[in-house]
Image 1 (spheres, protein in one colour):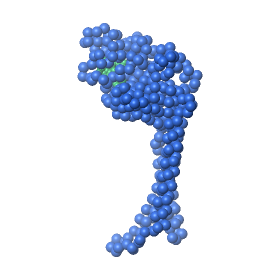
Image 2 (cartoon, helix red, strand yellow):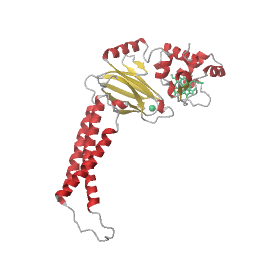
Image 3 (spheres, helix red, strand yellow):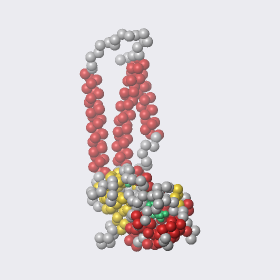
Image 4 (cartoon, helix red, strand yellow):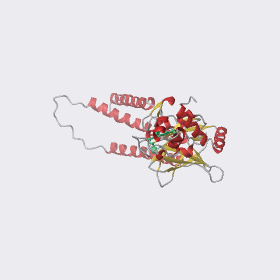
Length: 338
Ligand SMILES: [Cu+2]
C-alpha cells in the first residue's frame, strides 16, 4: 500500500472514532452512579464501549476508503478482478475479535460475581412487592420485624435485600443503584446494594404488573449512619413510614399516583377523585371519617362505582400507624386546612 492510502485510512478512522466517541460521551446514557455495584456496571459498559468504538473506527475507515477509491466509472460493466481470499487477513479478523470477546466475558463474569457478593456481614432487609406498593421489613426486636413504606439505607454499608411477591411478578430497580431483580411469587430472590452517595432515590417497579404499575414506586433514602440509627428507633417506636403530617403521608404513601386530590395538586385517574369524599360517604350511608379510614385499610370492602377491586394496595393497614391514618383521614376530609 502506498503511503498516501495509509494516511487516508487513518484520517477516516480518526473521524469515525471521534464521531462515535462524542455520541458515547455527550449523551447521558446511564444515570449517575450511587452504589458500588453501579460503579462496576459503568466500568463494564465503558470497557465494552471503548472496544466497540475502536472496531467501528476501523470498519468505517475501510468502508469509506473502499467506497471512494474503488468506485467504478458509470459505464464500467466489467467483472471485478478474480480474488481468492487472504489467509493472513482471515486469521487476524478471527483472532482479534475472539480475544476481545473473551476479555469482555471475563470482565463481565468478575463484575457479576462481585455484584452478587454482599460480604460477611450485610444488613438484611426484606422487600415485599404487591400490586401496587412496596414494603420493607427491617429486623426488629425479637422476631417481630419492623415494616415500613420507605427504604432507608446507611451509606457505605452492603445490604442484602430478600425479595418476595404476594401476587404477580414485580421487579425491584433503583436506577442509580444499577442492579435489578425480579420479585416472584413463591420463591425468594436476592439483590445486593452498597450505596455510596447520600441522597434520595426511587424504587421503580420494572415488570408490567397491572393497572397501577406506573404508580408502583417507593422512596429510598441513603443517609449517614447516625441518621439511620435514629430512623430505626423511630420505626421501632411506631413512626416508621413518615411523620404525621397528612399531606406528607399522602405523598410518600403514593396515593397521588392514582388519585386526583386538589389540595395535594395531583390529577391521576387510576382511582376515583378524592375531592368530595363526604359525598361518597353519604352515598354509602356512613360517617365520613369511618368511611375514608375503611376505604384506605380495606380497599376491597366497598368498591367505588366505575372502578375495579384489587387495584388499590392492601398494605396500608400495615405500613401506616394509627396516628398516621388519623392524620391522613383528616387531611382527606379537610384538605389540610384543619
Ligand atoms: Cu409491580
